[in-house]
Length: 131
Image (cartoon, rainbow, N blue to C red):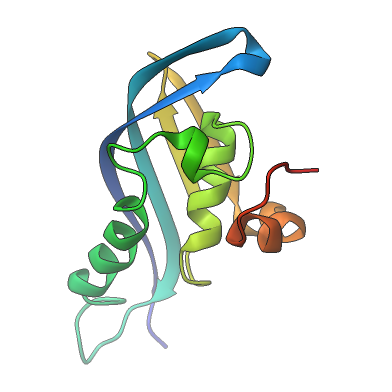
């Protein structure tokens, strides 16, 4: 039996948003650092759990929809780091177990797929509000 390996990848991107509901109505840009990961058994035939090309393609596909965009237009709810983390995880294939976002000079949030399941369908569709 192969050992289970925890895999994670980190990407950075910039995006614009405004948060009128939180008193920040003026659009502004942030640099976001996103890390996501999962645990999977090592494949002896490959020497890794999954090829790096597959990992990066899955993550980069999702982030290409956010980089240099206005998050108010891209996300189905207030474009906070928390909603951003949830949305990214909902777009990734099911083997991804968690996403964390770092932004706002030291802020970090993390969501697991288990916690996200009740919201998953809302985050995959374009809806105006999360409830």
